[in-house]
Image (cartoon, rainbow, N blue to C red):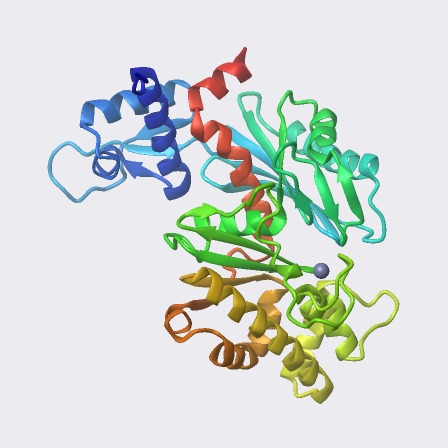
Length: 401
Ligand SMILES: [Zn+2]
């Protein structure tokens, strides 16, 4: 006979659940926690005392209740004290943020990256250098409880190795391990696919809060995807799930960086748009170049309009397939796909009408990312907070040891 969860297991679970409420929802009264968590007042009081003693939250009297009687204390995250490092490695840029409990971006650095090569030493050196600069500015009583990176590539679940990233020029790179060594914080660095983490970010803090089935599409040089089904990120057997950019929409179409032809990313990505718009020239690439095409189309440039409409057709076809397969409640366009979608929404809608099945199509909501360019970085921060949210006191005890 298997024993049920012990008192200690239950307490650990409840501490994590309470901290998650405060982290994702912001300041909340003890009374609200009591009703949201379905626990009695004395249990909530004991849990908040433990978290307060660990320095993860603090309790305050509410400013004004407008009600008679003793007000319920408000539990707030210790955002300035407890933080994580979030890293974002895209084809054209590197970003680092120090993010406080509660999701507050306390500090942020960004630099451009040469998309033509992937030098692990140089990259991790730059990122760790930014993190060190930020740490030097922090108060003595702050504590870093995690670190994670969003990477534009496929990340193997078993060991966190970036096994492929054609747009980064990365292959079989032990990125997290090397960055962890460089940071020297005694913390592992979790690594996730950038679009997967973008999905997680929009689901926990963006336009997809409370949406249990959503698909996030992230456009950069290529197209990444993150699928959240029944509230959980779909990782697949090895962690590579959700690579919607390599869904073939046009067999025999444009060559893709993955070695195939006619992938969604090959037909919709940056290169396809710039070539169709006749705007391929040295040094003319990246998000600004994409935005310039969308702006030109807006101002009535026929060539830009045709390029956008062609790309919009392929995008719509890809989204129609995704809607048929996953029946999402929401599809979110992020990264540079935000602009592309806004510039070609009519084509996308037309393709959905032609190819998506009516019951799914009629109920799905098409939205643009609420977090914008920060989505992948915010997702990395959420990944970095995962440990402390699952076992708050253990993580604090280990760090203080
Ligand atoms: Zn491909």
